[in-house]
Length: 102
Picture 1 (cartoon, rainbow, N blue to C red):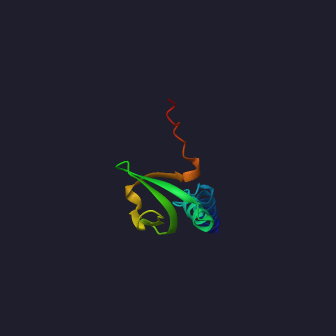
Picture 2: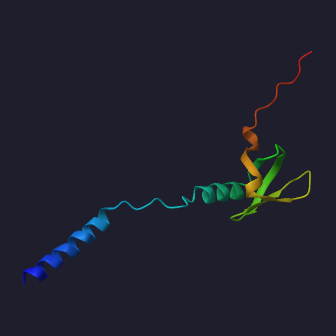
């Protein structure tokens, strides 16, 4: 009888230990998805800076795990691979260069 009681106690204790362990954080927070969706819906003019320093300006039409489709007004639309993107920002946040005063 005692063996049976001890084995039930042991199982209960191991279940409590398993529940007490912290779960690892999620691999994806969905922040990227939210940001892209917000910019797509509002058709925000974006500046996308590539790893080589080239800047692409346009609106994001769609995205997936590996790429962004950017619509440009002054050039053909372009498909950018995300691993080539250094960073991006809203075009309205671009700092205006001061004009040369003579």
